[in-house]
Image 1 (tube, rainbow, N blue to C red):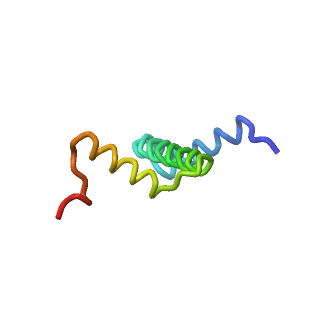
Image 2: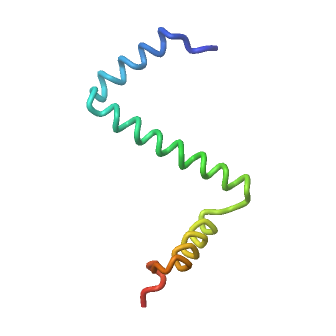
Image 3: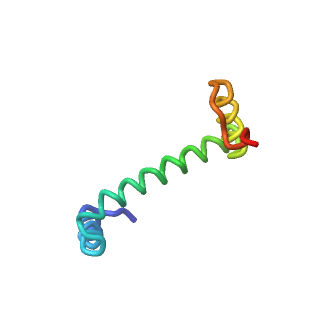
Length: 74
């Protein structure tokens, strides 16, 4: 089952009616960010890296650059 041009236009009109033309750019931005995070998460799974590993790596980079992180404050 394929989605044709007519179906896409109908969905677009419904979205405009429900959310209004001013909210569509915000929705598109949120969707783009979500898609980016999902893609990064999938790449991490393929590499075997976890969210915790990524946080540790960022902390190490911050320390190497001479900055401080929230964990360093005592």
